[in-house]
Length: 324
Ligand SMILES: Cc1cc2nc3c(=O)[nH]c(=O)nc-3n(C[C@H](O)[C@H](O)[C@H](O)COP(=O)(O)OP(=O)(O)OC[C@H]3O[C@@H](n4cnc5c(N)ncnc54)[C@H](O)[C@@H]3O)c2cc1C
Image (cartoon, rainbow, N blue to C red; front, side, top):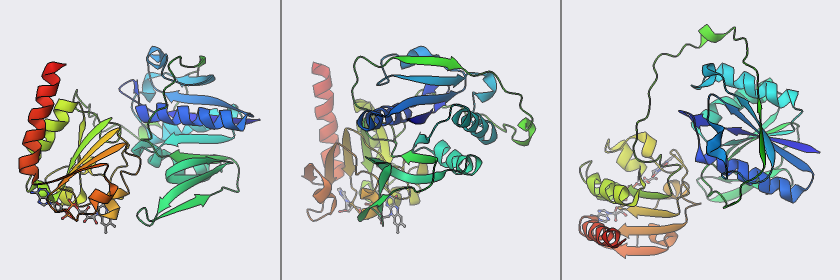
């Protein structure tokens, strides 16, 4: 019998959508396998009521709800996860692909002597994973030979709909005695305010590239994203030009996104950019060059100047929303 443990990441007490997606995908894997159970590990004070109906299948979640785990701390989190993994005799540990996971997983692989398969992997079943390599040009399959195993899953695959939710039991983990606390003091706490969703988690992403012309040109992108309740994304060129922050960069050296709807505005569609949108649902490209490679990856293409097309699109969306 295998026991899968899924790390459920929270920020400000809210469990991340990418973790719920990872949980649900691991439940699918367990259902296929037929000989596995799924458990979760949640660190930090969280109102677990928010998880009602959001999680598929049955399982148990170990909750270390102490205040000292409210904010991510590499050493404390590693210890809580490693202790739970070992104590509960788990066989596989799963993370959604987030900055926190990339920080913690290598440390954990040493702590619990596990093989680590990272880098936006997709589960293949049979213990294997596949991953795009060489800027998305090839799909490579990996099968870890060493047990136990840690997987970092592509974080932004859509969450399957499980309307009835699962039967989840919560087990509280006793607060720990921290002795290394002072080695990792919190220097500054930055609280993200209310605002647009993170580009890696958004259901709709409106992204702009060099074709937007300037930082000011992104006002159109922001306007459309805000009307649609989506997030702003950017190509590396837009980021390197200082028009947008790196947190919004999509692609090989940025974030992987999987929104239901993706707008690429003034983006050529270089392989390094496409590497980040492989899991997007409907792709709409707006580009003045009919031969731009982005049109090969798009479901809908609009040939035209973004400065003409986007204002018209924004007006249409406004009109549509007024009628709702
Ligand atoms: C190792 C490595 C990693 C990389 N990682 C990333 C990454 O993570 N993400 C990423 O995006 N790139 C990445 N790149 C860069 C990538 O190769 C491209 O250079 C970049 O994606 C191009 O950005 P762009 O499409 O905005 O600009 P361009 O390629 O210059 O394209 C601009 C597009 O806008 C169109 N356009 C111009 N004006 C208008 C207008 N007025 N209206 C409509 N369309 C217009 C043009 O026709 C053109 O197609 C990486 C490169 C390397 C080598």
